[in-house]
Length: 216
Image (cartoon, rainbow, N blue to C red):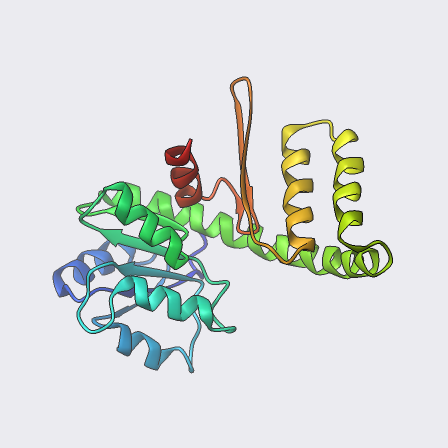
């Protein structure tokens, strides 16, 4: 794992913060906060690479904090990893709807947390690459939509789909088509034993995969 990864942890339980500090010591650059307000006050000075948020907190809970971060231009692309003692589907859906990228159930093993952070680091790299691609795709799409209109997007997707050799290429083409309508989508495609999940957030984002599997 990249030791330069900066992680902000927000949890009103100071015992949990101490455990996290001991677990992640030397693994990443960690800052802990006992409230959402304390975290928000820090953001004008420093932006993290990842947020680790407790779901249940007084005044502003993890859901509200996540929505606030996703509504802010400066923090909307930073991955959010939720922590909760509840592991039911309703909690996972609320985390996903708030904009979360992954979910850890309390109590968690140090190895699980380190694994989740490693996945989050990979997703962060993929997001950056996808955003660069999306910028180019959007400029191309605007030109196409001006000349062809909305039907042109559909025809363009159909043309691309016939040329796709893999399920992943087809999923990518679908995500790009949705982007041309200024829509964000999560797609899961299945072919035999092969399963591909993709969105603007990257490949196989854990919380998206969890929600899509429940929907199926």
